[in-house]
Length: 577
Image (tube, rainbow, N blue to C red; front, side, top):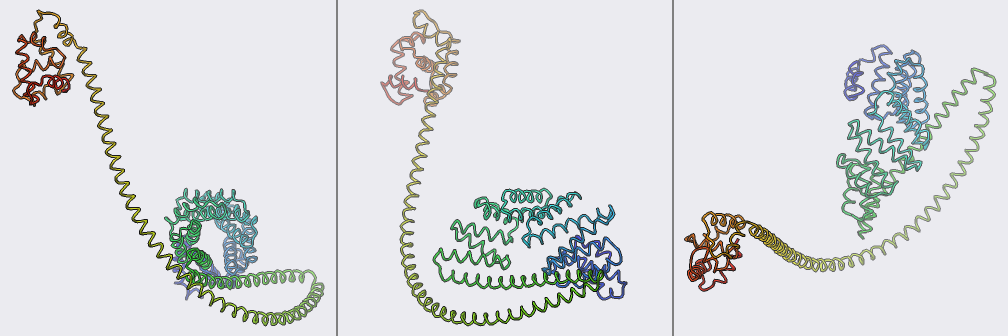
């Protein structure tokens, strides 16, 4: 039992295993041991979400601890008594038990109160849920706020996100959308900040549903739902809502996929909604046989839901009656202790009233039965008429279905023809786009070359201007006006250096075209490059004009492969870089 007690909070399945080992021998133990054994068992089962089916055992446990004065265990027993009544759909008794937890906790010492703070937080949360089921939204809000306060007082922020989510749900039910959105977002942020991503994305999926149905923001809702399902793919409600979003966008394939997923993972209510959505999709697609199949599935589930709802309603009414009956017995017992004679007189009056009510109920019931039989007869007759009409309508629908199928075949042929034409047009469009891209690429290539040419020309202009600013350039042009000018080797070297600086590949290209170029011929080329006329070239090189003319002719032949083309040679030397 100590092992079970140590792990019941964190590993209830292991606790049940330890307790099961005592099942055969626990009957031989003292009553206190037996009661604690049963309390631990109920606690472990509750944490494993095992549904309680009887209140007999928990009532014995509560009675035992109430008589033997262990206040901590009594409060815990009252909490699980409330959980049992919750599972039995006896909300009034469950709320009474939870109120006992709160009331009895006030009698605890400060240390015991601190120890039971977590139980108090869970108690308020349970009460909030029960109030919500009964439509008491303000009471539910107050209870869940108390739950949050209890957790925060313990510094357990990692446990408040579900209570915050329940507060958001209540505000949504009260149509206070801004408050609902605030608490949904706060619950999500709290779950993330406390390293609970699994629970955070459950809340995120519910927030996506709120965005779609309450705020009407389909795009935001879709992104939220997709994000939540990427982390938690089996959330039936998120799958159902996302399917409905895609249905609203007329994206049938996506809608059908998520709606079928919702059917696989969801409960009966979500399956019913999914089948209804699928039916509406098939109607939009004019697939009437499949739409009829989905409608039938939805109707079968609707009948099951009605039966479950009716059973729960009857259980709830019986529980309420039993609760009122118990309250009446308690009140009667109190009166018996105060004034027995008055009680007997009141009891007699009550008996008379009850008998009168019983007689009245009997005659009312008898009349109701007669009315019911008459109504059943009318319904039977009406049903026969409706069946006859239904058969006629069925035959008419079969004819219409055949006509629609024929039209569908014709439509499919037209669609196939149009698809073929569209495919051919698409191929022509792709070819045209490819040609356009090719032309565009050629255009861009030519523009790039033009830019490169312009840049080279600008560079050439800058280099040429730079050369014209040199002292050696001015020296040779000024020497043209002096008949006795004599050029030294240093001046030739300086000229060669400045020309090669301005035109780095000038000498290289000359030697590539004529590897056996002489020094005189190279100097002639340098002088031509700086625009020195042939007459002055003869003076600078100490040659006759005829010799210079012959030299230029030989250069034209060696560099250009042509004779008597000195003009082309001048242009060639001027353009050579």
